[in-house]
Image (cartoon, rainbow, N blue to C red; front, side, top):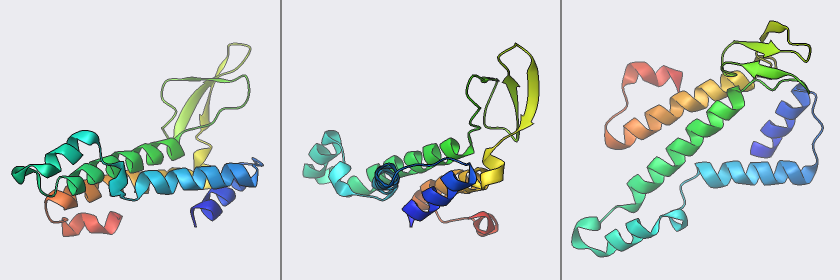
Length: 147
């Protein structure tokens, strides 16, 4: 599923990538966004041995996967400039200021909007906030419509 999403996103941006690159990126997304207790750090493993350290793995994995989902969302929202073009300021906004090779500046629409990646990135970033908050408290019903 992730591989198909990545393939369509690259096609919409006009990029041609190999199957091995798609496989590697899809595996990386799944590895970093699905809880896996094998990735728990050594401090948490040691704390699990103590009587007060029960259930340390779950919060640790929630923090790891939540930050990875938010990072993935922000990466999907980034504007990718053409070769030789630099970005002035943030490249996460709906519009981005580019500095061309001759030094002139132009304001352009973020190209992640055209591929649909911008909307996916916002959804992932918002979801990561609610996933993290729902692990410690119940989800606010009004905000559930965003997820």
